[in-house]
Length: 176
Image (cartoon, rainbow, N blue to C red):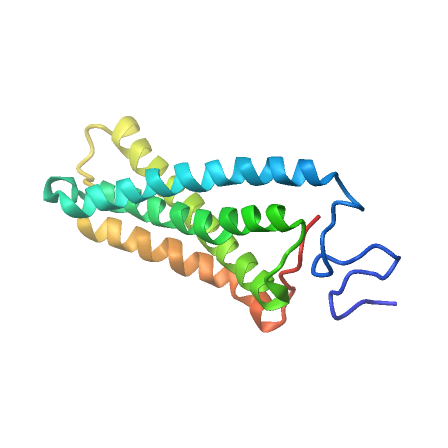
């Protein structure tokens, strides 16, 4: 029989929204240790990515086309941190996902969306470096229009692949 609602099977173990999981999966101390680690990740990643964004916006000299892609990467990574790592921190403090099914779906969507944007931003940076290193005498220059097109591509492509689960084609469900 198929489980079309994507709800976890009922086998006596509480589901991810039913309360603390530490009696069933790991000791509470383990959850709290992971929460401390995630707090460090959230703090460091927020400061580092926020600094890249602020400095790039504030100093006109840094507004080169290649840096547009770096800022796009920093924005994506900051959103992954705020939408994913901070939620993981909360989940581990509480021992379960306290925000409910709808927020679980939103978190899954946002982490997927921004994670894919970050990966494609890295791919664009790698491609630009390939052109510079392997074709040094060519007449290609990474320009403003390339950077803007690259940023638009990363977000459009990511939306293309992460939106269908919100519309019923597959789904975002709790992991673990």
